[in-house]
Length: 136
Image 1 (cartoon, helix red, strand yellow):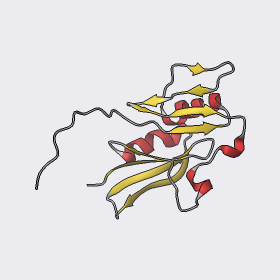
Image 2: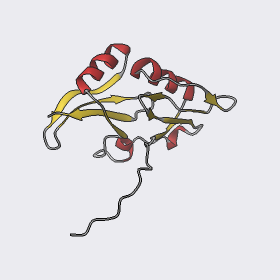
Image 3: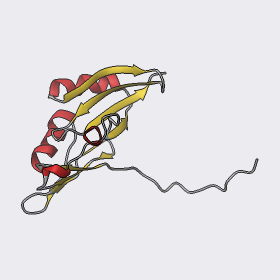
């Protein structure tokens, strides 16, 4: 079977873009509860921020119309995650963020159908982030 020609690596990451009610409070939650950091806010008054941790960036954009903030579970009950983050050790991260005040959506669980150990966290606007690691 023929193989495709080699392609240079160009893709470096992906950043979820979340609409939020209050960008300052949202960024502080990501910092204080989940261990992210941020360098600045954009806009006067602040309307945009990019908290980051370990190479992961989440874009937060403030909207005046809260009705357009639509986490996946709000739009479709059977669609739960808004972002799935692969991590080195889901249990270790859980032990770090839970006492920091992370809003735990579900405790660590083994997902046998795809072989991951994962837990879920909600942010202040209801977005669900799952953090999972290979259970092998």
